[in-house]
Length: 420
Image (tube, rainbow, N blue to C red):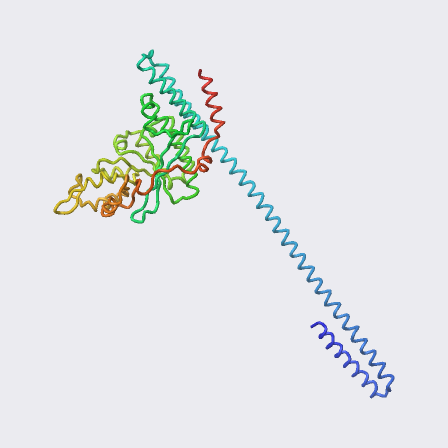
């Protein structure tokens, strides 16, 4: 294209030169003058063309230089923004790391205090107790051995959390989990609550153990909530923990700093414990409810419930054993009713609880044939070995919630040495 343009321009310049040469010849200049005019005109046209092209090339070069300068300015601006962003990210990561370090330090101190109080409580009982008879000595030695086993389990981070699914019916899709805390001894054997509570209860250690396991449960739930915020987790809480004046304020501060867990953490206590709660326990439940946390009742053995009291206490779930619930059904001329509520159709019981914001969960579901009857009662959730057994969560998640083992070990040994 460039060569064609040059050829056309050359032809045009030649034509112009010929016109000047013919004009010179016709005006009496002769052939020599005409040829001279032809050569001069052609040279003049090319000179003029060179000037124009040079001017155009200079203008294009100036535009190109300006574009390069603009691109350089944009690049410098982007680099400055990138540098500012990198600095911001570094500062954010540093701040998050510092904040997490402060949180972990606070949690470790809280865990230390709980372990220390648990040890002091047993030692005070042993010091204040009268001389042991031969009959009682083995029991106290067993309590002391149990305390040491619990201390070692905590120091070595041998506290596991088991989760059992709670499914929506009839789809059987997991919508909640119930958590169970377990300790392991130095051999790796899982210690069931019935094993150590029978020894710990006479020594007044049940509250301390409950507090420790509840504290660890909240730590792990916080980690799990980061991966799936739509899954709720039921975590057992005892009335002893609610009434513990030294533990509960610290626990409340921990939850206040993690109010985002309110949608993922549901505190659960037995029906008998709920009915027997005192003013302190009720007030502390109210403080948890003010933070947005909900409650659930399990071990339900009486369906004659005070629904207004449940609503005031922010109880949102009732866990009723499938066998117990189905055993309450009575077939009458009016249809199926519940023994404790003969004036209400059995299939309307779930609708009644929903009017007070309470959902029923049929727990301990073991057989497929129970599902048909549960669905006829319009119950929306189920739990039991039929849907899944309790299973330990991954060690990687546990490891991220554990306090530094060496730190706990060192401090507990240092404090134990200072007391002897």
